[in-house]
Length: 476
Image 1 (cartoon, one colour):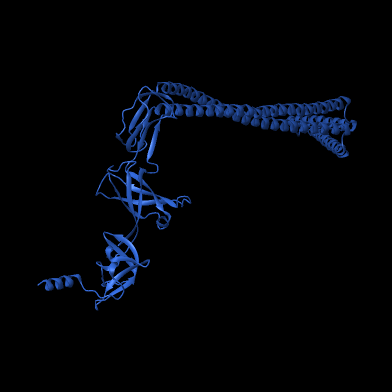
Image 2 (cartoon, one colour; image 1 turned 180 degrees about the vertical axis):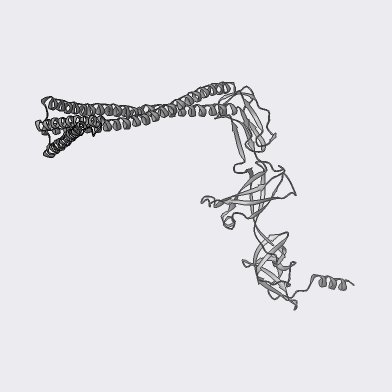
């Protein structure tokens, strides 16, 4: 036995099942190929707006985008080239600075060494010969004198022997040559000793001083020239590094060009989209329920051209008494019937239940109704039985067996003693002439459904078939 709640109302489109098709951009309608009542598919073209202005804008936007993109590429290449040149310039400037520093240090070191050498020579010249040098020169003279005397003695001996005819003429010549050499060597040693004892000449001192002055000037020139070249190299490096600002400006220009190109690309996409909006497509499958504009009319976003309704899923909007509506829950199944399709039930499901209206004590229930074949029509009156619960082993009695006695719902049960016993019962669902008995009687008990209005508790009764048989006997 099913316990149901009666719901009555009108059929309306389901939530989200109605679409108003309007032009995205204003324009004149070229064609509307569908009429009211036509069934359309999702994505089908249902109207066409003149798109020539939008197409012209799209072409203009495409040209602007091409030009902007070309300028952006050129700016990017220029920025990249500037960055490469600046990097190379900095690297070369650093190398030049390092070379200038090395040249300065090398030149200064060489000039300082020359100055030290010149100073050493000057000091040596000013100081004259050292005692050791004088002693060495005197020793050399003494040795050369001894050598001269030996050569002189040897010559006298050879002359004597030559005069005697003992030595040869060659020996005499050798002895004379040896004496001459010894004499020359002695004189040279004596001259050197004289020079050592005499000290440096003024000319030598002046020349040594001039060499020192020249070495100092060379050192100063090396420092000055080297520092100048280093400063020039540093200035070149600073200038090369400052060129990074120009590179940054070019890079910023390139980014600006890229942003401009991106904006032009967006403008092109917008123009192409606007041109594509000329064809109006059905957003859902359904039936054209209203056509507001015709070819030649001006269409705009505020005025729908068509109304399309998906009739495959309708909603039954029903008002329920509060006592019934409080029993209804979302998701409960519903059996729908309507005069548009007599004898053809439709399946439904409770979508929502509203709040109680304090003025009418009613609750609004929204019921989804499947209408795959499109038999049901929007606006038709329909009745729904909301299934609250189902009892597969319900205790039921015929409806005519139930009577009201002293404001109580009762049923008369006939026992085996043929006595009518009054039972107070609680009724439940009613279906096909049967009423569910929730409590008061048990399965298998006999109930009286004829003449019970004249009975009282404890009255004698007999089955109707026996009473008819007794009447027939009496007639006989």
